[in-house]
Image (cartoon, rainbow, N blue to C red; front, side, top):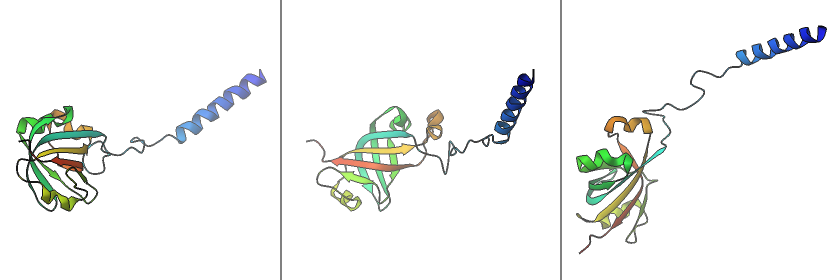
Length: 138
């Protein structure tokens, strides 16, 4: 009998301690949309190069993965570029090498976005992680 009382008391103390130490409602996770969200989805756009400025690249989109279908339907995309963006193809190694591309060259852009930002065919601003460019086919 005394053993049952001790076990019930121990179980009660254990449940109280877990209730006091419960995690916050957001469980420490980053927000699902907007600033501060952790990009988990890769958006891949394929098309032709239109122009590039210091911080952005414009392209006409002819193909995309599942997450980039909104840009494919629109036909165009403007992608932000950062110093961390990897640029490859035709001897390009750094962001400044985008000047080697001319209008009509083939471009493949890989960007990351939050899944919730892409809901309902939304088109949030994309920041490129990688840009691969090649000369246009003859």
